[in-house]
Length: 346
Image (cartoon, rainbow, N blue to C red; front, side):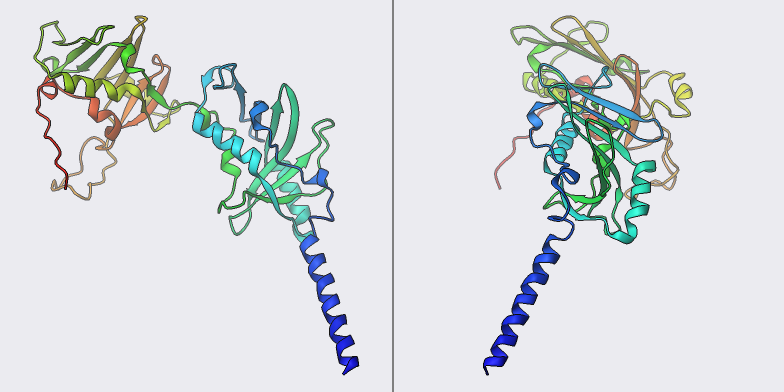
């Protein structure tokens, strides 16, 4: 009986040692310096550099007012920058790369990864390489490097954010278009002095909304003739310009010149309190030949029923916009006298 007890104690002790070794393999046995990817003081981060082997690169720089710029010339998307900063803060090691796969993973990280440099208070704090996703798509291969010497670590890791099911590569995109702010209009409504909506070929349906500094309103035709309006409708219309975004940049669209050679379908001009005009020109987008599912027409529409092309940022950028977003400002004068039905509680 006593012998059986000794055997049981030995088995339990061996099991405890085994569990300890398994739990610490690739973690406790790998020095902290090789796995210290996260940088938690993200409030002090003032620059992030991203680059890949195809020569795409992005430098995100924090301005004194807390906003960010892309490559020193474009306003950055706040949501994208916030997401990246959270990633830099939260990434952690899931596991080291297995011995059999290690050589291949290191080679892929060196030749086909995204380089990430994180600066805080003007000093390089983190340098690492972001690779592809793991086969289960729940982890991301990464390799740390020494910020001082630039020397790569000998140990690649599978990184994750605890509680997030997915890989992280896309958050480190070196494509400038992914980081640029996609806002066509962004106004504090009291700063708007006028909005002119021109419908090409339909001058009778074009109009100008006026707003004075003391919030007095006016509506007139494109020729200056006063038109009747409901104040509530004018206020509603102006509120649409608080923020209007577009889908994506397509400055390299092959048929761009052909599209721009034709007159725009609509031109929206917003003048602010400083007298500056923000102009967006909208162009019809050819349909793809596919019949919409809810259409009773046997023929596919000539033009895309969901999207249009547009020139934004003082005509510098060619983009795609949605009717869902821009359709609400492509009104006619009738919109401003239309009665709104009161909503009754259910």
